[in-house]
Amino acid sequence: MSEVKEIVRTTCPRDCYDACGIVVVKRQGEIVRVKGDPDHPISRGTLCGKCSLAYNGAWRDKTQRLSQPLKRIGAKGEGQFVPISWSQALDTIAVRLKSILATGRSHGILQTHYTGTCSLIAGAFPLRFFNRIGATEVDPDTVCNKAGHSALQLIFGDSLNGFDPRTAKDAACILVWGANPSASAPHAHKHWLREAPGKVIVIDP
Image (cartoon, rainbow, N blue to C red; front, side, top):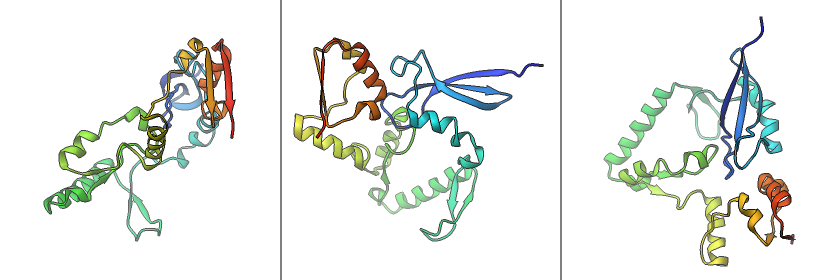
């Protein structure tokens, strides 16, 4: 009897702008391989080295991944946590938020909505909730990203979101300044080299 193979198409959860498409191959309910989705318009069936190694290596080990919330039971820094259910976690958060709001100190709640994995995919979904309760926000997102936005505003007069790498083929000249797209933007690099008919200039300080 042959094993039943299941194909699941999804999106890489890492916090990258390409939001690469991935194909998960499962047999008997277990993941056996993860590869790039050839139908994805940006990644075109490829994965960066980091994700290809992680998805087909350590991350396939269930014992090395968190599968439920953990609650701290000791002092900060002691590393003492116990697993709890999602319902318990949500109830704990709700009780804590309500107790703070009851004191009229909503500004004492600090939310950062653009951290960790799934950030780009999740987008700004929690902002309406935190705005409603009057929480303090790290604007526009995380501290590290804010530094980049501020630098772009000082240099160009506004913060830029970059460009669609598929439009590289329309450029007469592409200037890469202080970046290594072959390592940090492999899919954009792939399009620049193969499709850009113009000149590519790299300034590497």
